[in-house]
Amino acid sequence: MDHASPLERILRGVALTVVVVFFMFPLVWILLMSFQTNETILRSPPSLVFQPTLDNYRALLGGRLVGAGSTLQVSYVQNLMNSVILSVSSVSLALLLGVPAAYAFARFRFRGSEDIAFTLLSFRFAPPLLVLLPLALYFQQIGLANTYIGLIWVYQLIVLPLILWIVRGYFEDISPDVEYAYRLAGHSWFAAFRKIALPLAGPGIAAAGLLAFIFAWNNFVFALVLASADKQPVTVGALAFITASGIQFGQIAAAIVLSNAPTLLLALYAQRHLVEGLSLGAVKG
Image: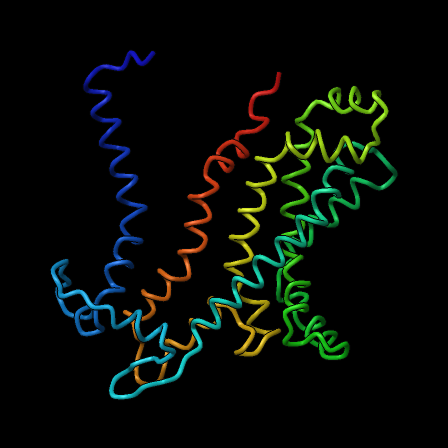
């Protein structure tokens, strides 16, 4: 029961409002900019009163970048589809490989297990520039340069260690007694993993998958070096909005809104699993 005084509740509400406004204001401002022309955005002083327009979204979806007296062809829709293909495929592969590996690290103790797990985790913290040059040369030799398969493979350096270590923690927080009882009934360890461990760790796996998807979606360096324009995601394709004729702020804002929409919708759809998964194991019995 909350025994706070009315003044404390008011101050708490004011503080919460300030925090929400502080973090939401840039997002709202970007959304408003996406419905304005460059002239409206750059006027001084800025104003919240303007005539909204959908020209920025039409230009993006139509594949043309409208500048100061010039029109440049862009492949924003293709970049968006590339982001979807790369992120979904890399996270799916990481879940397929990482979840069973996380279960093995959580349930079985074998020689060198911690060293292997730490080595995989170190890939996540290694600077991308450290491996980009060898990877670029290696991919050219084996024919994986500028291919979806090559990029999905490289994306595993980002998402696989993340999924492995997060999901491993969830499996460790689940009591193995239920699985042992299920195996005493004559079932194999794989059946116990599939029918007992996976459902119990489901929210945690969903949370790890969502976080991995966000990291993969926001990746910039790997795709910039290892892919050409027809395979690059939106994070790299956004460079097309900086031209010799100027920076198209309205179309950049529209591109930000469209590129963040998939992750926002996915987070809203999976928010129940996300909250449950992130809080799983916070209280141990």
